[in-house]
Amino acid sequence: MAAALTWVLPAGEFQRRMDDATGRELVVAGTYRATDPAPVSPLGALVAIPRGIVAAAEVVISILLVGGAFALIDQMGTLARGAGAIVRRFAGKGVWAIPPVVLMFALFGAMENMQEEIIALVPVLLVLGRGLGVDAVAVVAMSAGAAAIGAAFGPSNPYQAGIALKLAQLPLLEGGGVRLAMFVAGVVAWAGWTMWYATRHRVPPDEAGARAVPGLTGRDSLILALIVATFGLYVVGVITFGWGFNELSALFFLVAVVAGRLGGLGLSEAMAGFLKGMETMVGAGVLVGVARAISVVLADGKVIDTIVQALASPLMDQPPALAALLMIPIHAVIHVAVPSVSGQAALTMPVLIPASDLIGLARQATVMAYQTGAGLSELLIPTNGALMAILLAARVPYGQWAAFAVRGLALALAIGVAGTLFMTWRG
Image (cartoon, rainbow, N blue to C red; front, side, top):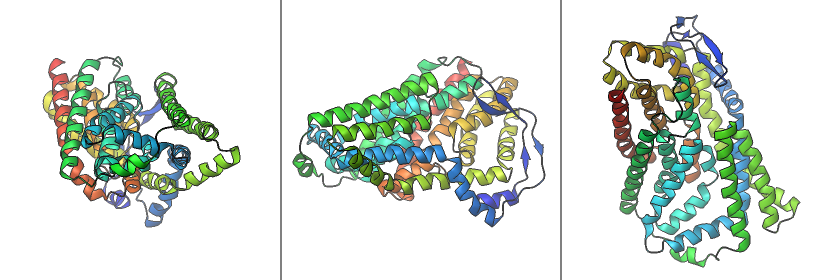
């Protein structure tokens, strides 16, 4: 379908420049021009699949190494015993375990845009879900769904709010109070919707199985503390030093070695378990690369800039409040073609910020519209490779997930619209 679009849409492109502040290549507003057509052939579309995997190499490697570490820890029984401890803690309460899990993943989303890291956690989350008596859709909702909500509204997300605010030349903490309020409202709404769904789609809880699992040992506690400390170190690295997926991969390679030793395994035995765990993540990693291939095809056909130009141009004729609201669906549409939130910020903010200045729209409102449109569409778009891989691992059909997520998305969208309008009126 993406290749077919390159035969239909006119080719065009913006001029670009390197931005030292963000280290990203940005478009130059007002420089869009038509170019010679570059339709992608069927063979070109097929070749885009391995090219997409190469383009997503850092993410794919991260999925393999982080997933291998968690699979190793799962083989030692630590994650199952940890899930059992949570189930025993919430015995008889069932869905009331959902809010704290939603909050935890939303915080990770707000701090470091957690997505791909969740893929490796799906098996233990499913164990937890069975113990609580909730189905796989609710498991995905309280993990990946919650992380997307937190990433969209979190005031400290360096890949969404951080980059967009920097490109808009706004202080990183400006509007933080409003974003924090939106984060709280979003988490409450999503947790409430997930609980409502879970109570109406109960599955027989496997509390007996959870109780049969031995309790946490001292070694288990050390390993779980190591995981929490590693994630904490990574969050600090992301915010302070600009760490990315390579640093995450390196940290969890070390976690696999240390956890194996803490679990009483020899080095060779730990590495064998680590490699075996990596095998379980190959499908998810390849799926992420295939999703990236869609944007590779659109870039080859030189139609991404055409889409941005066509969607952004009509905003110049609209009142500020209406323009701000129209930016939300525009960002959602663009995000299908540009599934990277940071890449979308680098593509759209240099175009939309000057347009906002010309029509008298506050830059904060423009950033908020981007966060709402691009951030929340992460819950649904099929080009989000992490979401597709998580659904694959949890064995949740996309249609079933979409039927659930679209209604929760409507609640979150109302919060995003309210925040965008508030930023518009506040100026």
